[in-house]
Image (cartoon, rainbow, N blue to C red; front, side, top):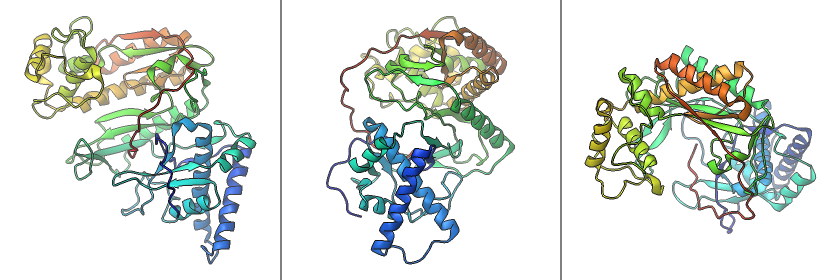
Length: 448
């Protein structure tokens, strides 16, 4: 494979092994790609004999995934290039691996580069992924074929993800996440069934996005997964920590753009549980919280995001915190003139009972309760045929359905926690069109 000397563009997207053709036009492009790769193999002698049936099926699936990924990237050029991992699999296969992908994947990338369909960008250094981008030649084919973002099929793959800290991994935080290949239980099967049902419901939902001049949005990327964590000493069947939903194009959409979302052609409302984590902590203790905004803490007034950050960190900690967490957002930095002991004292003066939750690591348990509430809300909305787009401790729905959804959210939370958790409703206007795109800082590709 000939490395390109050109610097790869900013890499914001990971190669999706589970993407495939979803229309006649896309299928034709894939079939052409498969034929061209086979022709290249014959001409170069890269393949001396015919593949076995199973190997041929895997080969076709890998080529299809690469071609459809490149085609989709052509339609969303502002997303940058596609980050890919090229090394051979040096561990047993798990439930998270695509069954078709194997050691011949690198050869397929090389062949598609040789026929002029992609450009390969080698890894710039240790811990960094390689990348691929569609060539102008392939981009022209995509546009000539009339392929659109709705012309792809997507599978979520495994929808229930379990991981633990891998302290041998290298990262700024001193650890990475290690995926746990758990055995199926009645719990994991039930959770998977819930996610597959929600994904199937959203696949048919009427979702759109008004052009706001800030780049295209692929509203067909709707597959969601539920992520759990476990401690080193937890059994691999534990699915009671975390559980938040990730995935879906709306989750990573800048909040200032959300006003352009349309559900069934209606403007949207964003509904949030008020001071959710603190209220869950009070419910965990069997206590009633004070009235008002629970993050409005004397000494931290005017610094709500910083107050929310540190209170939540204290509930996730399994030790006595002496330092403020590392943050980059200006509004999450420790307010000037304070120290960590003074911040902790201010919080406990306002919420003295929460001292029993600090340093005990109950945050993951509270997050599991939070995610359970959201899942049950989404299940109820699905039964009512009401579209809800999950946002961890809230969701997006159409404005005409906002108060029906608010009632459902409050009722479900009370059924699960025996506590009333109020829901706020925010109706936001569409974002103003932008005539130019702001430059995006380089984002290091991190394995999903």
